[in-house]
Length: 118
Image 1: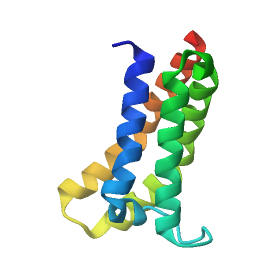
Image 2: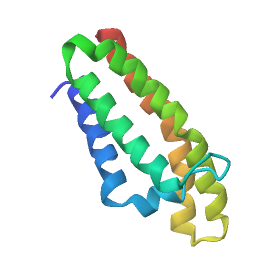
Image 3: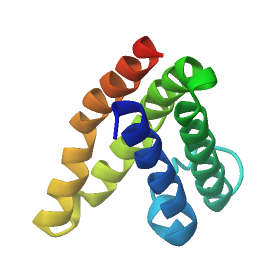
Image 4: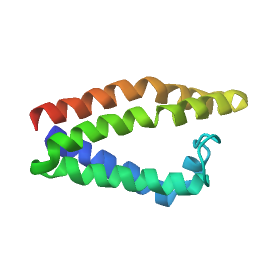
């Protein structure tokens, strides 16, 4: 399985979890955003699945790679919010939310690499 296929699978799986466990993602939605958190949860899940499809198809892979990088950057505020909100949670949960933050860098790099190989 090549890097683009792996990225597409990763995005599709992540997007699917927004529908399987929406409460987890609802907590990450900043309160400053208009509307209900569940709408943003489902919207971001659909976005991940759509970007996965773009990455999976060779004709749209370059655009899909760029969209994936932008998507990974766009979710960073939600990851920061979750890390702040979990400051009083048990240590393993706090560590998990903190580890998500630097993970965005390799995810963005991966998406841009897929884009460059188009």
